[in-house]
Length: 464
Image (cartoon, rainbow, N blue to C red; front, side):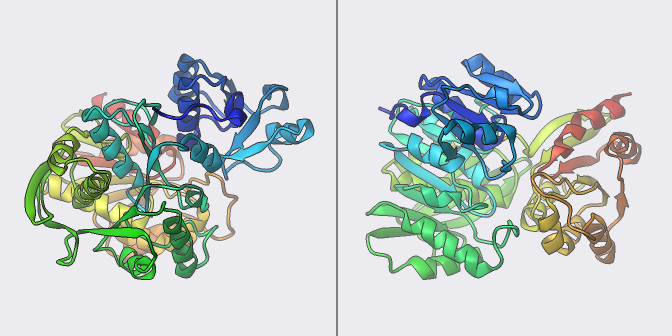
């Protein structure tokens, strides 16, 4: 049976309850019987979903939203010290709990699988959640995106397994004690929190060190950062290391990946036996995510052939190459990619899925610090598109950095031979893109900010 409610979580108040990570924890607690309340900056389908489960959700942040009898206030790293509800919590001496500590408390008594890496966490966590559910294991899970199938980012299950997306951005993944940990890749990102690759490696080493005795690390045998991390942790006692990928030395070796339109067929060699299964999303990187999920499930004792079949039931996550619709012969697809590696992978996946189509990209950079460090690489990635529209930087939790604008990306893209147009007025984008698009084209809205809102608007313009 899944664990219950920690005493401190009986009446929690979430600041920013509509966020992907925060809402998932709130949903699980509500399902377990906690009296959940919280606030968010604006109305959203997530807020409505939480209310439907019984949570109280306020819009806007105000000291009065925090009930005097709250047992704790849950925050993420994005919540600033001057938030009125956080200030009020201090006045009332209500304990403040970081999101990662709240999630860690929910996993106590379960068999946790923690999925980490610079890219691919949400997809891989989702694949496991879908496959384990399909097999009747009724897992709990907390994911940084909504599944296309069940349509939620978190569920309280009655089974023993808890699958969680483990976020390295603020080192919060170091709070978990997984039985199985997946590391998909290790790259430099989140430049406001990490100054170098050495800091990244140190953080991931700490995460791996939290795996329970006789637990398993599932890690890529292909990606350079993951290979280096494997070298650093191989000698840890009581740790089983299982590598996966296309490298000849991989423990779970990918023999071939055949892309078939918007799906892939994957053949792996596992314990000397060949196993072939289908991944119902396009792209080599998603196929490798599925192999990581397969290896993690096998580490928990689930028969490989059962798990492989169940992985075929995964149909995607919102914002991960999600088809938003088609109008006037133009398909509009949404991508969460915001790091150059992710952008390149998704653009190559779309090229492979529809090699004859013209690919138009609407890209919104995410974070000033990321653009400062990786703007050139972002621009180079956009050269894979036939034409791109680049918006202003989405600030999220950051204040502007003097001199850092989308121009960094645009200049790099043009230097790489890309056809790029800067559009500063987001409202003008749908009409501009509809004017560019022709029947047979693919339009990809890309970025981690609110660029996702533009897909339906582009479809409306194409239909008119």
